[in-house]
Amino acid sequence: MGAVIQNTILITGGAGFIGSNLCEYFLNSGHKVICLDNFSTGHYHNLEEFIVNPNFKLIEGDIRNISDCNLAVKEVDYVLHQAALGSVPRSINDPITTNDVNVTGFLNMLVAARDAKVKRFIYAASSSTYGDSEGLPKVEEVIGKPLSPYAITKYVNELYAEIFSKQYGLETIGLRYFNVFGRRQDPKGAYAAVIPKFVMQLMNYESPVINGDGNYSRDFTYIDNVIQMNALAISSNNSAAINNIYNTAFGDRNTLNDLVEYLKKYLAVYDSKIATVPIIYGETRAGDIPHSLASIDKAKKLLGYNPKYSLEDGLKEALSWYWNNLK
Image (tube, rainbow, N blue to C red; front, top):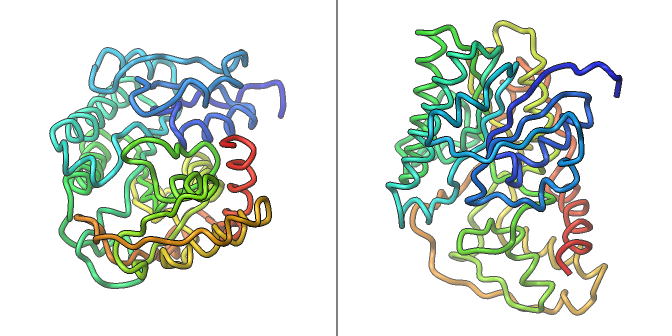
């Protein structure tokens, strides 16, 4: 945009799927961006196009190390904290590491942000916080008991952020992400998200395995909707909007059976054989929430959120990227 740098924004976990998309957006919007990542789940290739940008700085460090956090927040206006160990199954297999990164690392970043007097600390919360709450749609003020170690860590983040707002005056905004998908999402590894994993399998004519009967439903949220929420969280001057938690979603739900049918339909545009790949059904996965649907009324009212991409709209864009980058 203009030649004047608007803000300096630290994006933790900036080499990851969501983080790298945020890096790209804010660099293109004329901001200076600092990325802090230890590359445990992020990738250098997600940052390659930014490295030569004079407004981009990469710090290879770990949020579990307070000195790395203090270094990263120097002269920063806003923090977008995306760094975390995601995945419910991973947290069940290794709760200690998940807690170290998601709780200790989060607290380190809060302390560093407080001490550096950053303007606002915006963090990735999670729809897993709703736990065993059965009501739909999910509203921010009504949650249940967590169903996994991962969910506990993300709830603790919200509690810590609230305390730092009240005790130290640090402005915080939590964004409860609902099943985010889109370009740069990693299809590889034991804990790959369902959409990129299924896409890669279908492109290889391999049958995706759905956990359960496929009738579990999710509020699948395209990455550009998430970018919009982060941008609004930075720019909002509405005092009622600060120190709050918001669902970050599209506000609709689709079953896993719906998802697979869309994937086959849209991928068949590139390769007609994909339409004939059969689906396999397996055991229900431990810690999974049966149904997830967000109310986005609060975000609309207080932040002016207006998501542009439904599941189908987002898939059409994402699949074009996957086809050109994964083949």
